Length: 309
Image 1 (spheres, helix red, strand yellow):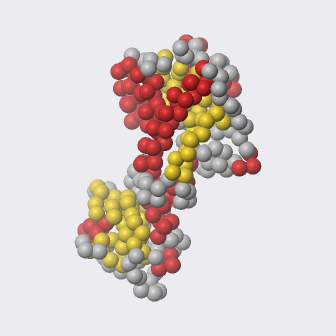
Image 2 (cartoon, rainbow, N blue to C red):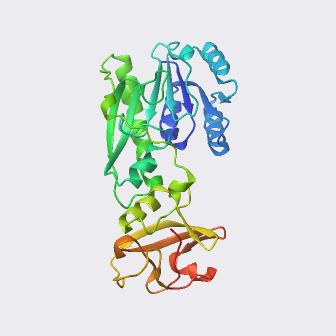
Image 3 (cartoon, helix red, strand yellow):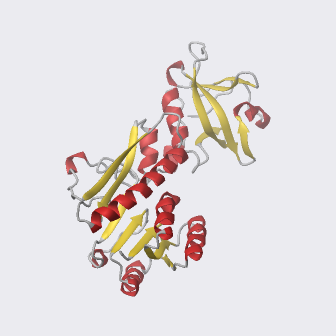
């Protein structure tokens, strides 16, 4: 039976980890010191199954990792989202090396949060790529791939759940392939490679005069739930649109993008986008909570007000 260590820093890896723990394949779990919510859940899983949890910090990561590997002598380390680069000194220690689950197609979508960009760019499919790790991020030989359709109404959170369960299924396939030597590693095609950086604050704001209703909807979906939606500015105040739909409400010619066209219980909150296209903001978020779109009126905003681009 394989001795497996798991590095996990996000709930994307939880279904696979729980599956491995239930089959008693994990000797220890590691995570970073960056996300308290993840640490709390991993601590719960590990206590439930009597498996030790190691918290790694960036400052002394290499020394901590080498000690961890020496302590548990794994055959395989599975990486299911992890923020620190694995040092070259550690990569060859396990018999089967370090194998990463990247929750996007490789090499086309390298980077720390490719799902945001896939939804924002209106891609129609995503997926999970399993690859051997080398000294660089997301560049090692591919072992497994699985495609996942991206529905235009699906949010970041909904697609994340699909990817997480696909990753769990692929974990079983990977372990079987390693043990019976049936995997066929394939080098990534560098000509197709594209790196997407972590989204910055400016990427999360709606630019009404530049974006069509489809583009605004895509940004809203890409920001839900992790950012509570896409950000909107109005006279120094910000709120988020958490869910939205393309509307076919007829907007008068010459209406400025960002103009609130309707704001009532019957029609809801409809906003003019680029090319006189209409967007209905179904759900908004403010510091006071989540509300139906038309309740934006309770914050002093009125029909015909123009949101900032």
